[in-house]
Length: 234
Image 1 (tube, helix red, strand yellow):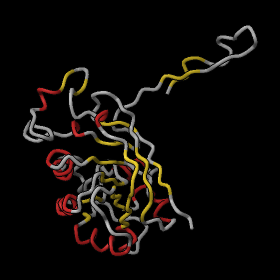
Image 2 (cartoon, helix red, strand yellow; image 1 turned 120 degrees about the horizontal axis):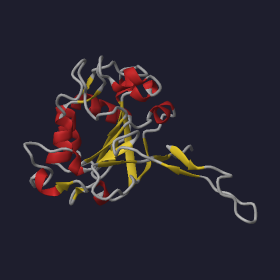
Image 3 (tube, helix red, strand yellow; image 1 turned 135 degrees about the vertical axis):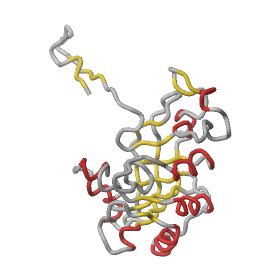
Image 4 (tube, one colour; image 1 turned 90 degrees about the vertical axis):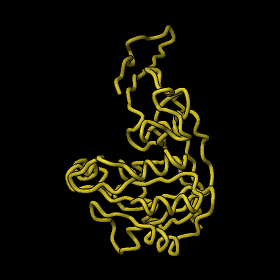
């Protein structure tokens, strides 16, 4: 962010002044939603269209983040870290379908059309970039069988705390992203990444109203969002 006009650069006749900024960002920076155009497999995106036929310097003519209908609905937090009695799962831990089932028993039942957020505690590393990114030691996240479990439950949106909604193996980086393939390419399920879930986990929130509206950037492969959880504190 750059402050391109400061107070005092231009002063109106009545003494008023205004400041403005210029913001430059990527679509996958901070908390963000992945569009279906974000990932392809064997050259094809969700629905089977060749990615090359949809992309240009202007972005994507279909499946961009502008086609994401804002989500206002029920969300369930499946706190896998709590399941193991820890604040944060170890780096490189693979969240399994069995763990999600067990976390669901401790949380609230997942219903078709819900948003499901997988708690790993990783957002507690928010201010430690080297650890958070996981380039060396990896990061915890769902594996393939967990992704298939989410598909079977009919979720509309899946979210987590890490940069990639995947188990990232130590030293592997984003070499392969099978969960992205399953959810985005094969099933058309949007992903929310880099969420701050630790406060919800600490509050013991298990189900709540989630408001999720990424910036509708036309043709973009993703966009920043500020998710809001409306929690019944009673």
